[in-house]
Length: 259
Ligand SMILES: [Zn+2]
Image (cartoon, rainbow, N blue to C red; front, side, top):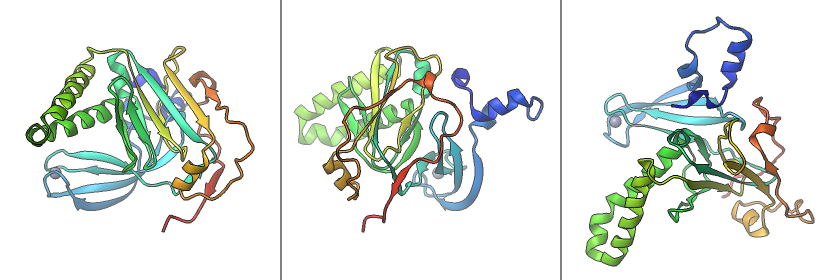
């Protein structure tokens, strides 16, 4: 795990005030627990535990995740609590994977984001907000495709064949045999992210912000048109220009939840 590829906030503090904790690497990934709720495991239907936690995503911001873990079967997932707010601009983040370490990049996929594996020509539409990493995203896609192959082969053998090509290619990617390839997250609400690395060279990681179209605003339930009249040029923000400190409270349009 390339945990040293970025310096977590906790680590920064540790550098300044050493001795506070030893071996903080693992702890840095464990956010503060806020609340615990016993809940049903979707995998084995025994009781597991959901924790609400405030989590700092490096170079991004703090988000609230619902982290589920089942002691019985080991199943776990991290869902993002819907923010309820939208940033002023949409965001498009793209990462070019060139080495196994890149699979560990954290991905914040809000419930309005679309994830694309470009070379694989596969996308995950908006759905539940997730905190995961690139490996988690790709293996979930491949597993999902694979689980339906039996029925597909019977009903649509030609489609099944094409899907099998995608599965095979995806497995190669996961095995590290198909670098380089790209993954992107596009979120009109601006609440999604792929973590950069300070060592990312040109063309490795890119974040672009964009003004939403009228259609995108409508899809989000926004009727605010204050963006109109501005230019469509997005800003390229290089990771080296970002600071690892939490950004100021984002200027966000708050609105009533869609009814
Ligand atoms: Zn379970």
